[in-house]
Image 1 (cartoon, helix red, strand yellow):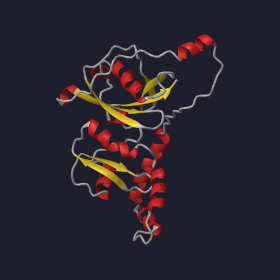
Image 2: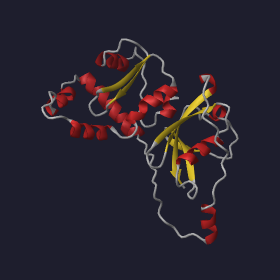
Image 3: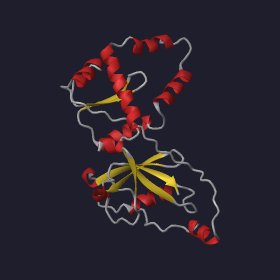
Length: 239
C-alpha cells in the first residue's frame, strides 16, 4: 500500500539488521522500529518521522505538505524566507552534508541512484491544444455527463470507511470519505463537483502506480473495497 500510494516519493524500505539499516539507524539515531522517515535527498535531512505502524489514510494526510513541490522547490522557498541575522548561515547548512562520513554519503548516493532509476513523471495540463472537430464531436464533448447523486460524506465506524485523495488538474488536492461498500462511480461524482469546467469538458481518472499509471473505468461496477481504491490517491486530467 505504501508503494502504491506514495508515488510522489522514492520509497526505500530496508530491515534494521542489514548493513544499510544499521547505517540509517545510526545516522538518524533511531531507537524504535518500525519507523517511517521523510528524507530530503539533497541534504539528507530528516524532514518528518513516524514511529510504529501508521494507518495509510493518516500517513497520506501528513504527507500532503510534501507533495506540492520537490525538494529543490522547498530549498528555494526557504532561501527567500531566511530572516536577516539568522544564526544559521548557508555555509553552516552546507557543512551538514560535507562533513558526513563515507558511509553516510553511501546512503545518500543510494537514494539518489534510486531516484534516477525509478523516476516517473505524471504530468497533467489544464489547457489542451485545439484540434479540428466535426459538429458531431463538439456536440458529444459538450454533453453534460450523468453521474450518480453524491450522498453526504459518511461518518462513524472507521472500519466501514475509506478515504480517497484526489489531485485536480489545477494542482489542488482534496480528500473525501466513502463507504468501502460504495460503488466507485461516486468518485466521478465527487470529482465532478470539484471541477467548475466539468459540465463542458470531459475528464479521466488515473491511479498512479510505480512504473505505470492505471486508467480507471467508469463502467466498472466494483466497490471501493473490491477495486483496491480504498485509501489511495487519484489523479484527475482533462481528456
